[in-house]
Amino acid sequence: MLHHASLEIDGNQLAAALGFWQALGFERVDPPSSLAGTTAWIERDGTQIHLIVTAKPTVPRLGHVAVVVPDFAATVARVEASGTRVEPRQAHWGQPRAFASAPGGHRVELMAAPP
Image (cartoon, rainbow, N blue to C red; front, side, top):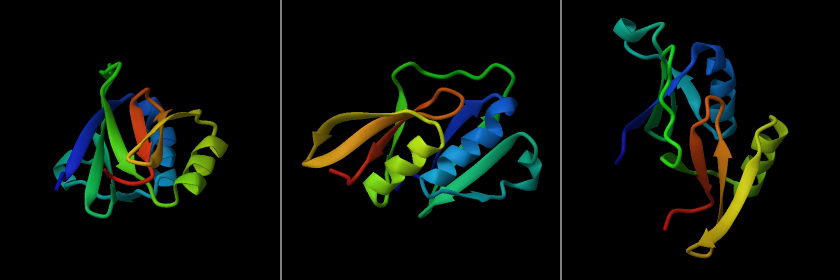
């Protein structure tokens, strides 16, 4: 089981990024008190994304996290309604998938089901 992935983000984009991840079904959880103010953690089904606040975030061009989302069509609609463009991609394993760019620029693959 993958426990978490960490993504760097500019503090000015943190609120929008939290909204994006919440649209994917993640909920905010408290980090250890020693990290308070420097990071925001979100979690769904035991998997966490740690948003690390930094002045000069590094965002890979092709690197991404992939998330299996409940009710693919409804999730895509929620993400698009929030103003984020969702780019459908070729289905794999007979299931739809798409890419979205989270606030801060990180690519996130949305998957209807795992392989």
